[in-house]
Length: 225
Image (cartoon, rainbow, N blue to C red):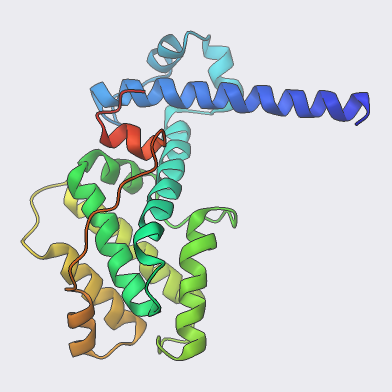
């Protein structure tokens, strides 16, 4: 590696460490005040950096919250994939995955607030939504399991129901069976018959455990970072 490449790599690593430092400081702050309560001065103070340093990485607290939410969404999908990947049916994986995501939000409502503010799905192809969820849709379409032929519409359907359901769960009480109803609607939208969509959406599941040390694990454990 020549000197110029080395400088670029070192600078990228330094930026990555500072971005992570700001995210961790913001997460601690938002554990106390919620996602709406963080302002630049507070985040900079919590991270022990200047306002100028903050602005080098984020244009606003809202940008930081979106970055944090996308990281959490990635963690959530990876966590849920550990529960669903052993099933061979893409429709069952979709139903269990959505219910598990909503189960995590029910266990830690702040997650829903982050996700609803960020929007979902994301456009970054490296995100777990496209690494894990999209291939499941592709398998379901290729096998004829899903009868809606437009891939992008299927992905939009999953993202829309996920975000909408999470937002609903963070704005007030939801009726019993809310997650199951959401999963049933998803499967119906993907083209499954009504009776099968209902049956697959009500299979017993256990809430998955996030990876130790992940942002998801930290926020679910009380956001002690």
